Image 1 (tube, one colour):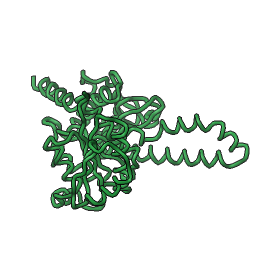
Image 2: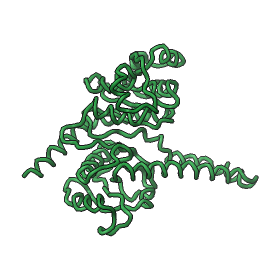
Image 3: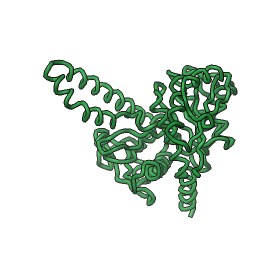
Image 4: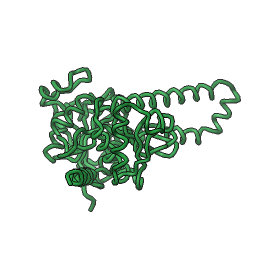
Length: 341
């Protein structure tokens, strides 16, 4: 009998809550019998949404949360004061080992604060990074960090590289993943002070496959499997990536519909085009895990629809089955011991 993975979903977080988180929960349990989803939110509202669907009742539970953390609220105050919010209740369930993971489309700041303050960091982890998978010509790459630490130090980036390498190997299944640091050129003398300080440290890491610097234009080509940077750079890369992808899709669609001939060509090319565009749809890869915590916290886009949240739930199952936190703990302990020798 398969072991159940218990995933808490913030039913009140995001632009389309509670409809999309609830639909995601239903889709997830209808697609897998080894998942139990706990929907945390205002019970009447959540149960009204659930009543629209057919699903195995034993695989979805509703936990009442009276309060909601809004996107515009100061994150620290919101986490401290709104003890009965869906986010605080959900993260406390992970902290108390009542659940394996927490998924939210709510306030990014509150997720980051709650993850560190409530769930807590693994001993030895200096800063937990947000690490989304981004589509590339060769599959996917992990961008770490994309929003959690805008003032990171070199030692933080080294840990990002190690955790990212573990995640890509054991969750995505890429053996000996290639790790690179974002830079403005391939030459070692290039880069800002942080990159110049971090590069030699990464070269000394024997537990990762460090291939050197990567320029931004090489990222969509799949130039590396783990893309290391501090959060300011990472967030700019991610937002430009997403904006350019949606713009290109819009321009392509407009062009294909511009003339009768192009419409005929579009009809013939549609199956292949849909498959290609789907591969570059970030929602297919779930959310961004906050790596290095004592439990799993996953942040999806604020505008996430059910497919992205469902895939984030499935992501949590793989994370648990591969014992990613256990592997990170072991890696950090071994690294600390080697540095202390």
